[in-house]
Length: 279
Image 1 (tube, rainbow, N blue to C red):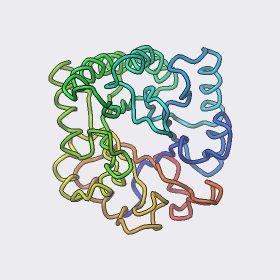
Image 2 (image 1 turned 90 degrees about the vertical axis):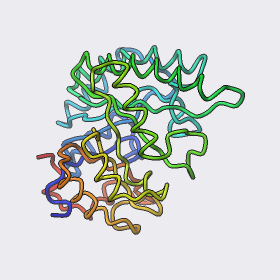
Image 3 (image 1 turned 30 degrees about the vertical axis):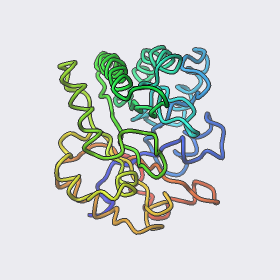
Image 4 (image 1 turned 180 degrees about the vertical axis):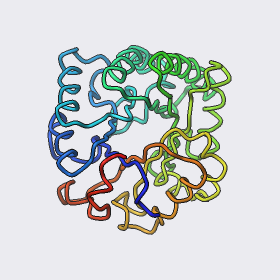
């Protein structure tokens, strides 16, 4: 099976970044993709002008690309930040201001998955205080996602690259998923299973897939080492995706890898063009 029966989408916040944001959906479409995902594109503000939201919607619509995943405001990402929702003070306030903006935009383009990055530990703040704030904000985010018929994603990152981020294993992220679902009763919090991050943490990927596929709402891939395209590192990504499929996963697989020093459009030779359009 390999890559033949997956539903791939392109992350436009890590690929096609050589182009302005509004040109990336068309570039993904020109490369053969019909589905895309995004980190929160306006890192300076959780509440951009409606005209900016409208322009992005038009770019997605004009390209014929479906937005299948969107991050809530996460601070400076890419950059030093790894989310805002557990960071007391201004960042938490910015996350809350973003919740309905992000959810309403997702609804306007038919996006059904919203990713909430947890945020880094802060010097001088009790981790328990951060975790309590995180749960409050995740409950608000889960309710907003539920309002538009979407799921809320909780992601584990990797410790080498995100040493201050507390969710650096699949079990740690799953624990937060369970906590949110228990608090809301909605059941719409899901695990974002990123094979690159989990492999960087040295986790047993077949075991993670076996244990947590049923709780997984989205998958992302990049090869390791290097976070490049499949085939540039040592991970058997085709085999791992086969395992996910056999375990019952039928959702999206986000391509969240770095193209390296070549144009993004040249980084997809591993995936035959007929398999790029979402089935």
